[in-house]
Image (cartoon, rainbow, N blue to C red):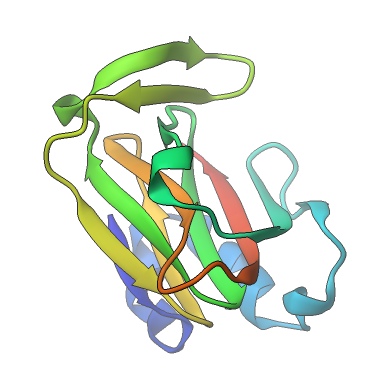
Length: 151
C-alpha cells in the first residue's frame, strides 16, 4: 500500500510500466469534470472509474481486495477515510469473483485509517484489503477516480 499526494507521483512511475499513463490520466486535463463512468486508457490493461458518492459510516462499508488489478484511488473532491489491513489478517465473507475481480472480508482485528483529502492517492496491491468511502469527520460528497492497473 502506498499513500501520497499527486505532486509526488513521479516517485512511483518506475514501480509499474503502466503507472506513467495512469498518473497522466489523473493529472492531465481535468478528470474532476468528467461524468461518472468508465474511461479506457489502455483497454482492459488500464482503465479509470470515475465515481461520485457520499461517504458512509465504516460499519456500513465492506472490506475488499482484488487479484487481477491493483487500484490507484485518487480523491478529486471532498475527504474520506479508507481503511487498510493485510488480506491475510481477515476472513473471507464473500469468495473471490473472477468476473468482478473482488473478494469481501470480515473479522477485522487490526487496521489503519488512511485519511484522503483532495489530490491524495492510495495504491492498493492484491495483498492490501481496503475499505473505501468511509466518513472522515462528517458525511461528505466526494468525487474519486479509481485507476485499475492489470497485473
